[in-house]
Length: 247
Image (cartoon, rainbow, N blue to C red; front, side, top):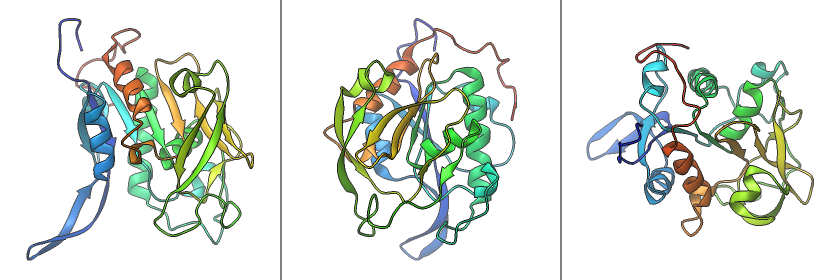
C-alpha cells in the first residue's frame, strides 16, 4: 500500500479443495474455515482466499499485504527427508507445493506471515527444519474434533511476547510438532511438556508461527491485529517487479 492508501490490508488465507454439497449439487470446492475469515475481518483486514493452483505466485503477492498459512493435514515427510510414520496422514502434494511456493516468495519479499498449526510446521520445514510425526496419544489431541485448552509460556523479549505477554491459554489440536528448528528460526513458546508452541524469524517485519489455533477464539484476536498492523506498514517492502511470476 502507498502512504495515502487507506484501504484495509489484503490478507491472503491459504485454503484447500474438498467435496462440498449444497442444494442438489455435490462438487469440488475451494474452502477455508470461516473462523479464519472472521478473525481477519475483525482485525481490520480484507481476507483473500488462496486455494491450491498452478503457476507463479508473484502476481498474487504483488497485491497482498499479509499471508495466513492455515491449519490442515500433515505435511509430506519427504519434504524434510524423513520416512513416513504409520500414524502420519496421507500426503496432499498439491497443497504442500502451493503453500511452499507462497511461503518462499513471501519470505523473500518480507511480506508479513502468520503460520497456524500446519502453517507453523510448514514455516519450519521450508527453512530446513524437521517435525516430530506423532506426539504421545492424548497430549495435544484428546477427543476428535475438539480443541484442547492449555497454557503456554512465552520467551521474554520475543515478538510473540510483545503481542501476548509472558503466558497465554491456547486452543490446540495437533499430533505433530516442531523437532529440529529451521535456519534462522527461534522457538518462542513452549507447553508444559516441552512441545514447541511458537516460532519466529527475527529481523523480519512479521514472520511468526503458532502451533495453536488463535482463529477459534473470538475474544482474543491479538495475533491477527498484529498481522494486519504489520501489513499496513510500507517499511522493507520488496522491490520485485509488479506482475512477476516468481515461484
